[in-house]
Length: 232
Image (cartoon, rainbow, N blue to C red; front, side, top):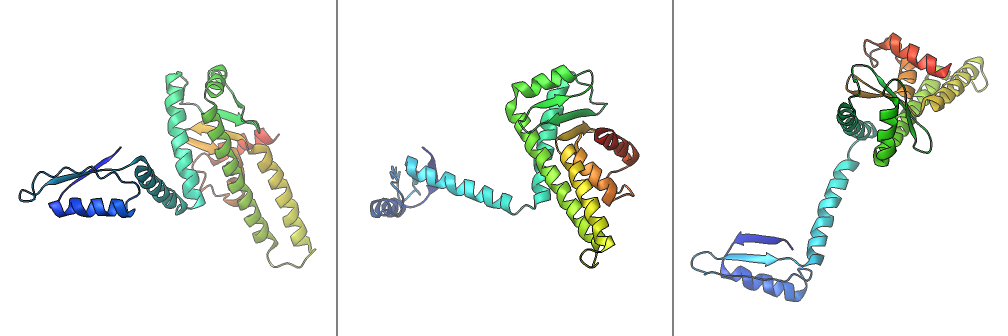
């Protein structure tokens, strides 16, 4: 039960009671306590479980509507940031050295494998926390989807306005198919480095779409080498 208290006159009590009887307030049990009309009485309205449920749903709908206003990239970034914070905290408690990149791979069943000297600790953590493993799988999948969309944009750019079946279109189509297969291969690969979760699929397509490294940052060459080693 939730009590809503406000200063009012005794007339408010009568109004609330009449509204409850008329059904305007859903099953509201208007438990009102009036001290005095002259002194500005405090009326307490105790909502029924059904009325409280309606209010809770309204608040939940409001929060859901706010999330709908977010773009795909914003939504993905929010989830990635939240998972990054959770993994960083967990790995610190496990004494995992975060000065080095922590490389993870999640398969289609949600099983997470790791590399390096902390492999056993990390894999046990994900096995003991299936909800975190599930979130990693979903974020990896969303990043792969984003990479696939970038590959499609590259295809449309490379084929340009060339005629159907032209050499330019065939070349663009061939590149698109190769990139799509590589994205699929890298879809479950993700690394935690410098306080950021990075998708290998996104690093791969960014290295092609953005060869100057504006998106990738100063470690472009190293990222390209890591991606190449995973595709070998």
